[in-house]
Image (cartoon, rainbow, N blue to C red; front, side):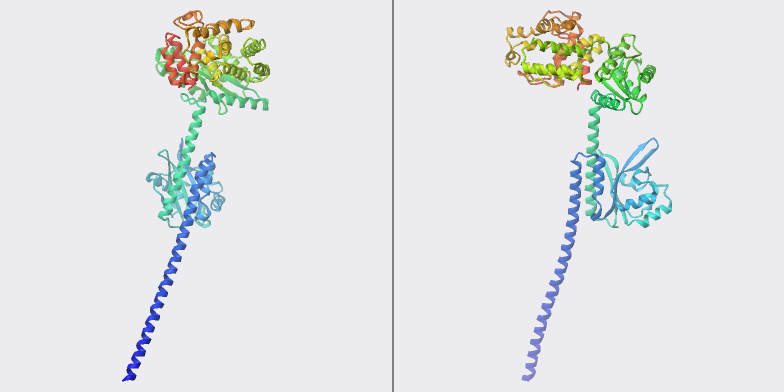
Amino acid sequence: MGLFNKFNEIRSMIRTVENKVYGEKQDYSEIYERNLQLEREIEERTKELSIANKRMLSLQHIWDMMNSAKPLQTVLEAVVNSLQGEMGYLHSNILQKCEDEDGEYMYILAQSKDITIQQVNEIVKTPMQLRRLKYAPGSIFEQSLVSRKIIQVKDFKQVFEPILPDWTKDIHKKILQNVQIKSIIFIPLYTMKKPFGWFCVYSSREELTSAESDFLTIFAQQIEMAITIADLFEALKEQAVTDPLTGLYNRRYFEELLEKEVTRAKRQNQPFSVIGLDLDFLKQINDKYGHNFGDLAIKTIAEVLKNNARSIDTAARIGGEEFNVILPGIDSNGAMIAAERIRKTLAEQELDTIGHITASLGVATFFEHTDNIDELLELTDQAMYMSKRNGRNQVTLATPITETSWQEIAINTFVDILSKHNIPLDAKLSKELKKKLEKSKDSNAPKETLYAVADTLTSTYNPLHIQGLVKSKVDAAVCLAKRFDLSTEEIDKLKIAILLYDIGNLMLPQELLQKVAPLTKEEQNHIKEHPVIAAREILKPISYIQDVIPIVEHHHENWDGSGYPNNIKHEEIPMTSQIILIVDAYFALIEPRAYRDRLTPEKAIEEIQKDEGKKWNKTLAEEFITIIKHDFS
């Protein structure tokens, strides 16, 4: 009995030990399994983090490209190439939906450079990026764009057959045999809330996870932003060089292009011509029918110029009713034929309410009439106004300049004034300006030198003067003079007078001109002497500008007779002097003064309107305001 009990006791001990060992074995097994599971989870999380990091780097790459100011094509190509390789995508591209006279179509705007597209291009011969792809109703492309949802496709036949109907079954078969694509993912692109196209990803995987879908959506949004920014930039760039009313190029772009054309003509020893065109009787149209019909006439001219131009010709609205056309490689004979065609086409147009309109045209040819860019424009202008004076609705060919040009007269006048020391000016500055003026006689840009010298002289008595404003004054004055059909001779005198009319201020005390406090009556009278000083003390000794002196002397006479120095009024005041008065007043308002801040153009125009019928007649003010709003805004 004791032995049996002993045996049971030992067996119980063995069972206890076995249970303990088994329990520990179970614990170890569970720990081992848990460790394996943790290792797998860590590996999966590491892989997900790696993918997420790559996606973030791809998105960062897009941002960097968008901020690099590179062309859109370069940005988009970098974008699609950033998805290749380790991301598991075999190919990607961006397609744009377009429309022309043959209907809707698609084309590849950018595609990644990879072995997949190389293989496809070798099979189909014509590279995919050069193909016009059919936009088929009901296709995957339309479904994706209309629904604005990502669509994944594994049946490639339903993708390619509708857009490439010319592909044979053999081509389809060869492509599918040679590529490892398992699915194509279509992500619709919208810019400015309008459908743009698709971002297409060719994947080596059949599944599309929600995380991957979210990433591709964000990626597509960055593409949309890049396209939108590029579109806005292009729109702004186009606005900077085009006239908003007509869609033609503006004066600034025309002048830049003209300089390039001169360089090309000299390099190739080939002529080019410029046609100048001015609408006849615009003022009468505006007065009789209103400015809306005046704008209609101007837009009609623009359409005629567009329809009668070669692809290499450039038409521009220079200001108001004035247009210029550059004809590369065309001599005067060809330019006269082109100008006559434009004149005839325009005269045949019949507009609502207005009826028929006409224009006066002038033609000048580089090399044939001059090899100086300023003279070329002067000659074109003179020929155009010769057409006006001879009855309008005709074309006139320029004749070479035989008389001294207004620029030469102005240069000689400044040199004369500086040489005789008629004005209190620093000797060193006077010498520098004289040297610059003398040198400009042999240059191609004497006007720029004249404007720069006039700006410099103005700055000596007005430190707040804005450089470059003299050129704007001349341009505005000339535009206004043309509105009132002033002759070329009168306009040339006006240009010289604009440069010289305020030179009398150099003789006044600077502390008086720059005084912040209100002027006393005596100080006001002293300042009113500057037109007389300019006319009689500085300019009178110069024999060849005697006909400019009355313009300068009367440029502060008011329409109602309240001006100075002679209190003349209405038509007694030379039209050129009236023009200087209003031009000077406006540009003085948009410049800062010691006693006030500069005004905005809108506020300056309001001030001009307040003095209609007082300082200037109403018609002059209205025409001037129209010019400022259309050409100097």
